[in-house]
Length: 134
Image (cartoon, rainbow, N blue to C red; front, side, top):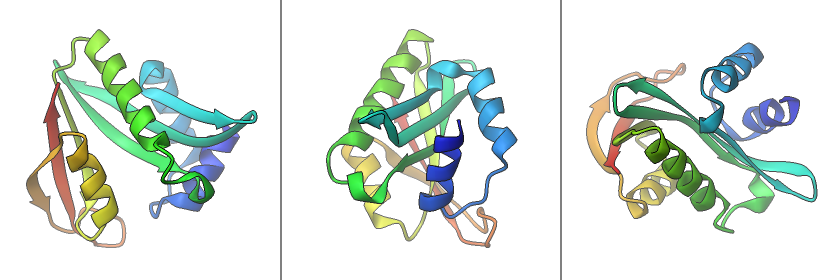
């Protein structure tokens, strides 16, 4: 778990309490998926069911040195498979409005922007809600 927390602190702009990662894992271990290379965690995705047939992706992070190698795509695809097994039909997430790489990544995987959320992040930045039906 420490490796996931360390990677999150290096790659994500939000500050998350370490206990939150334990909570996510204990709540829905199927949605807590890691990618490893040479026994080292290089990426992870965390998502949870939020309502009947709905889930939310909370975090997706890939080590800077491992990006552009389809690791994020593979993690997302695995999460979508797990969600399908849980009878989840709709996936949503939030992404910073200025994070064009992430927006394009999710659009490539069938997500659409559905809403803008003002001052969503801790630092007051806006987010888009993106959704996909599976």
